[in-house]
Amino acid sequence: MNSRPATMAEAAPPPLLGGLPDEIAIWEILVRLPPKDLLRCRAVCRAWRCTTSTRDFLLAHHARQPSLPLSYVKNYGGDLFTLDIISFDHQGGAATPQTVARLRRHILIPRVSCDGLIVFWIECKAGQQLFICNPATRQYGCLPMLFGGPLSAVGMPFGAPRPVAVGMYSHSPTGEYRLVLLQKAEAPDGSSLVYTYALGSSQPPWHLHIEGPNLNELVFSRGPFLFRGSLHWCISNMIIVFDTVAESFRQMRTPVVPNLSDLFEMDGMLGMSSFDDYNDDEPIVDIWMMQDYEHEVWAFKYRVEIPYAELTLQFGLFYPRDCVVFTSWVGDVVVLVPFGRWLLQLDVGGKLVASFEDSGGLIGQPYQLKQTLVQHTFFPTLEGYVVNGSPFI
Image 1 (cartoon, rainbow, N blue to C red):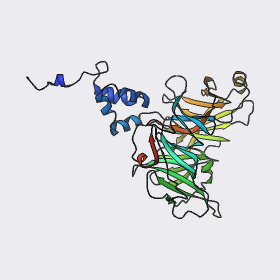
Image 2 (cartoon, rainbow, N blue to C red):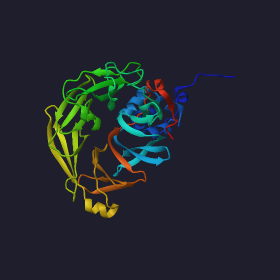
Image 3 (cartoon, one colour):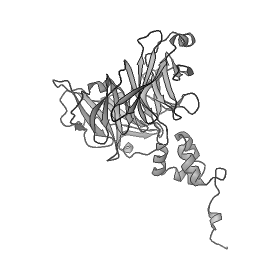
């Protein structure tokens, strides 16, 4: 039997995408695909599967994913209810809702999200507990009982209410994902205690010594929103900022805006939307942009007038009490307005762009979902850790 070394032309397989080198196909095309499409492409050949499974590729892929608003749909049935996690793709003219994952169990309440990870509050036999999931990889695990369990925080007042998760962030100095936990203390000034907890850690939550604004309202706030490496919550007439590196709080001014406000990003600037329903004939959404972040200089950008009378004729007698504003990955400002069982998409001129109906009722959230296929080491350490199993269906 004759044998000879393979030549370079024989050893290298031909390019798979119309003559494009695989280097371009992988690092310019595959790296930009949504997670579900990328997973399908892994079946094309072994080279693609191996390259797109490396951590470097997955981090680059995650960096190129758009941050899209997160919503969910509740469908009740018996003792359990089904929850659809929905994100809004905006590749075309409409912000099309797409189901990212579906879960089923007892009470499920989304609390915080970061880098494609979502933390839920659940009711279980031991009481209230948190669990974390990655909808793209279908990983799930319960967080330990951080208070009242083996990882109870040192110095927690006896009998005090359990803290609430109000934020999650990536701590760049350590590479850890951490939760911000807030507990209303029985102090004379009514101030709160703040803890951080590193996911997967065997250490109890760490108490942060806070000097600054009263943080009690964070429990009822919408958000937070991550901008310039800091978490931002909009409460009352101020913005609370948490530096995720120094792990310290400060406050910023807001423009004079009434009622319900949310934060978003547009053109590299921090934006704020304010929903005002005091005018029953035509509720409005005011949009402001922070032109100078360091000096906290705001400028008025848009006023979106919601055509209530016109929408009522088309969709029934409902009244909008909320809205979610975000910027699409092509730079358009999108306004989503829950309207009964409808979710309506308006442009900045108040024109109806699209409408979506669901029997469960789409519930808008001021959270963002930036999907990821990156594997995190903390997941296998969690109690009840599963991949592609219950509560995913």
